[in-house]
Image (tube, rainbow, N blue to C red; front, top):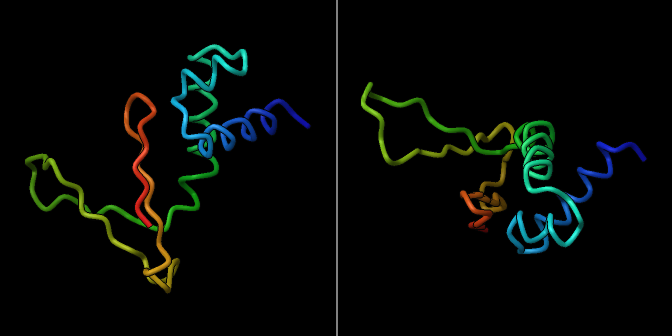
Length: 97
């Protein structure tokens, strides 16, 4: 198993653990910055390409505090099965099923 595969597997374990990144990294003897790098890399290569939700373009030049999420029926024909997961700073995750 390559280092990338090992780290991606650890990132998946972290996502399921409910722990913050720093606590999980510490428990596995990893540096926080190194683990953050692998989390971002896994997100860019695995999570985002599988995304079932698109954000709508902003309608004005003024930034909004809200982002409209649009389900793409070509990708997810059954929106009732759509799962949304938001990861906030500090490792806080919000899951909407």
